[in-house]
Length: 99
Image (cartoon, rainbow, N blue to C red; front, side, top):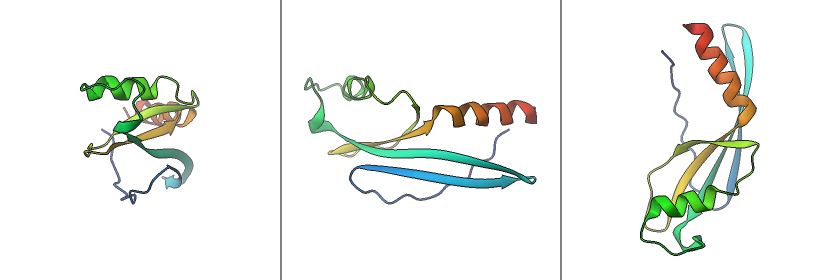
C-alpha cells in the first residue's frame, strides 16, 4: 500500500515546475512534477465535451512528461499535474519492492 503526502500548490497561470527530494529509509529520491492550467478557451476545436477538449490539448504534450493527476475543473480551466516519465518508473519500482 502506498502512502501519500499532500502539498498545496498555489494556482498560478502558466507552468509550475516542482522538484521534491524525499528521503525514505535513508534512500534519497528526487521527483519532478509539473502543474499546468489548461484553459477551456484554448481548445482547438470548440466542444461541449470537456473530456475531448482535454484529450486534444494533451495530444501533443512533451513526451518526457506523463499525465499524473487531473484536478477539479473550474469554469475557466482545469489544473493538470504531470510527472517526469522516468520518475514514474522509479515510483512504480519502489511500490513493487514494498510488496
